[in-house]
Length: 323
Image (cartoon, rainbow, N blue to C red; front, top):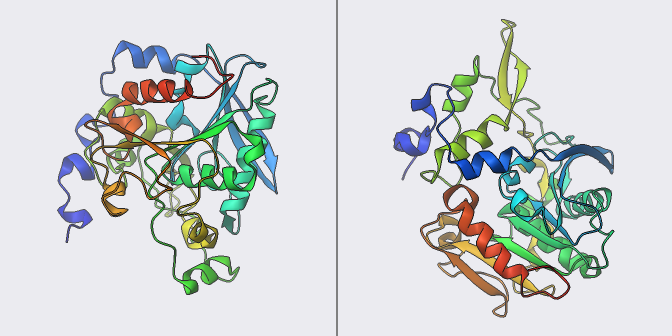
């Protein structure tokens, strides 16, 4: 069995060789992140939700939803490619990124957060309904959105989402309890260099592009007091108690259901897809699949421009959206 201690350094600590410095990046990436989004917060069921937006209001809408323990800036180098023709938004789900934390979490609440961000960003100012796009955990959130409120969207694109097996009944019940002990604070690192050196992906993989890994990692951190009182350090921005307090029970009924126009983009060597049974999708057979060559689970890290091209091609299949 492979453990953290036996993972090769290129997987366990891909940014460690840079000693806190930024890896060199190509011009296309520099140009993309130079397109600064609007940044704002939207209240939703007692939590402030971090939202980013690009492009002009009134154009057809796209909203991007990130994966587990991630944040809206995972899309900051993807979204600008669509901002000329679309009004584009991305959010950090509660308990992640800059969004507020909750005592308990549920997919139905995440779905409400996506809707709140989409409306606040003006994605319904166009005559065309928006497209919802979600990666991994975010793909499950988008799927819940589509099943609960198909009238809100023109269609969905899920990116390397395996869903996984339904949780045991006792796990779902535990997740809904309010008396499960909370950690409230993750590990604090004394320096930014030390924190960056600890960043890695789950499921474990060699990052395809280290400049993207570094960009994501830096925006995954925030300042926090050192436990020994010696000053300020760095810790991760996600709630370490999110998953112990997440009710997954609503996912059990999702497998095999098709909520409307749906495409699935996945990596051709994704560990998540292998865990799902080696199939390109565990969804309804009518869901169209697009495999990205030479990509593991985190396609925006491994093959970002191929992901952009695949999304563009997929959008062309829906009416009333620009090609």
